[in-house]
Image (cartoon, rainbow, N blue to C red; front, side):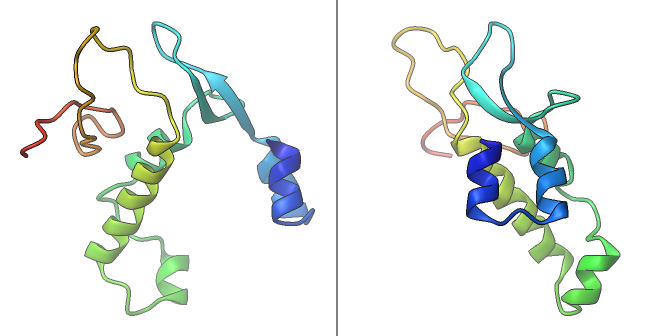
Length: 118
């Protein structure tokens, strides 16, 4: 994963530093499929991103994008977290249960089954 990331981006010092902090881990109980995680803490990238949902946009972002609204910032964080979750395995489900939709707002980063009609 690290090699692929650096091949895609470039081997700048900041990219190398970031690549050293990632890991693909099997997390959860019972053990679930692989997730992109932080190598030290084991926190999934989706969990980290979604934990920022609803928080204020950082000043460095607002300096670069002064017209960015809080609602737009929330949308960026939310969609980024959902995109990361899309690459994670579904949690263990009962046999025959239809997969639910993702409600990232419920439980901040946890997959929650929802009715297909919601």
